[in-house]
Length: 313
Image (cartoon, rainbow, N blue to C red; front, side, top):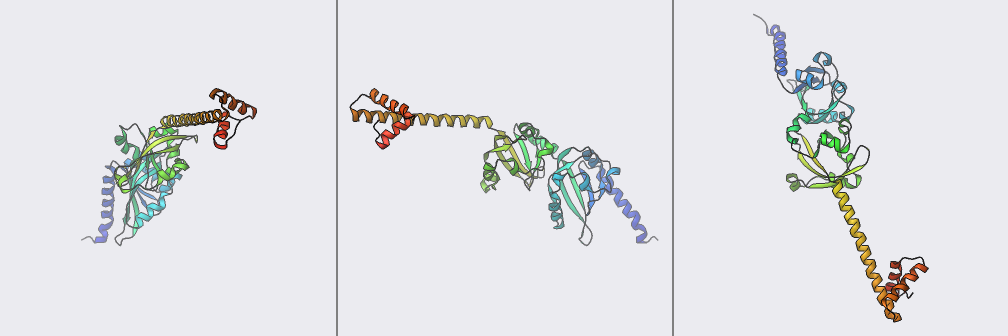
């Protein structure tokens, strides 16, 4: 009769074979690492998503081959979550073998030994852009998806076109760094309970790649608990032309108001001067205008002095 320890190696081999067979049928990329980040499992979907074959990637450190510099900040957050027994899920900036960068929706879970010690990590990932495309297919807005930490985990093609940002440049940026400093207080404040159900449209300025600014109307929806998104979606509509038209109208109104105020003061000054001197309104106007010319002053300034200071030119 075979002993239990004689059966253990073949049983373990069978277990690994079954696990590898199961992973080969999964449509999402599955990557397993030890606690040092060394890759020990890499399924066919991971090959297709990242471009590395299993033979090329096994044994290498995952941080060195799939995580660009902009994604390094998540490492401590992920490990802290896993050590506390919680899975980590969210948008993550990753890099393919050819150097291209894209947004992945990643869920990491800890693998523990029988005595509860954390022994490794299994991560499941998919292209966040592909996952969101059906949700955004009918939207004409530019869209940003922000991770829980406030960094950009996805930028729609409409966003990169409107603001002229290459996707690889904007991924990993913080939203506050894209928002004009004068508008950050409005945009970055936490939403109230009522606003979570019906988020308001916020007007702010967002930075283009050439450091110019565009006025936008932005609606931020909290979908951190949605397994398809795991982030905050910012729907962005360009309102630069509308704001320019509003500014031009406000400037015109101000000019009209100034002109009207000036005209009222001049008419008052004409009446007061005509009464004091016993002359006609036209003669009073000519006297005001002559005094303005002689003293290199505006007609409005002279009229104001007549009305408020009793000047008698």
